[in-house]
Length: 154
Image 1 (cartoon, rainbow, N blue to C red):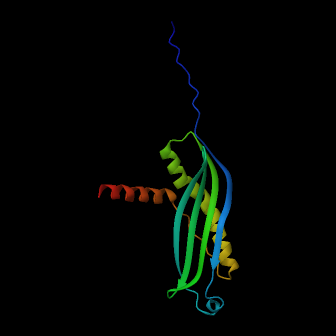
Image 2 (cartoon, rainbow, N blue to C red):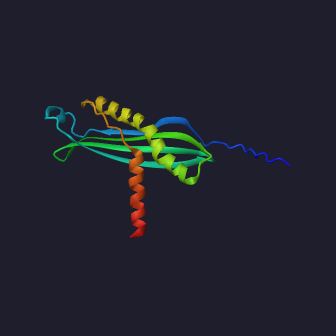
Image 3 (cartoon, rainbow, N blue to C red):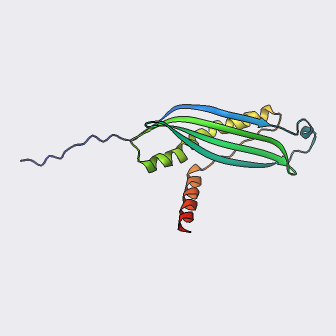
């Protein structure tokens, strides 16, 4: 009898992008054209949210929503809402890995598309270009997980 190691075929996890698309976009510029005659020193407020939908076995839709609001002295100059979405396949991942991928990897992929859509809308509305800085979605995910953990303890 020989001691031959048994070989098992291990299938590595599969992650693929099926489609990236703009699901929704809106722009409001309530103070146009008066705002173009005023000094341009706006305050910018950005809000991010993520939503995911399981479409079928191993297929998910990930939606990155960004709301950008510019204001001067408390008056809104423009309000932009973007829903940048992607259709992804995730096979061979644990539930925790799927959650992390949908919360970190997918928005990291979607963000440059959303940033470009926002920049284009701002420019088309007649305002100076708006360039959003990169976002560390891993840090946001870690903060959110820590906050949820702290809530369960208290």
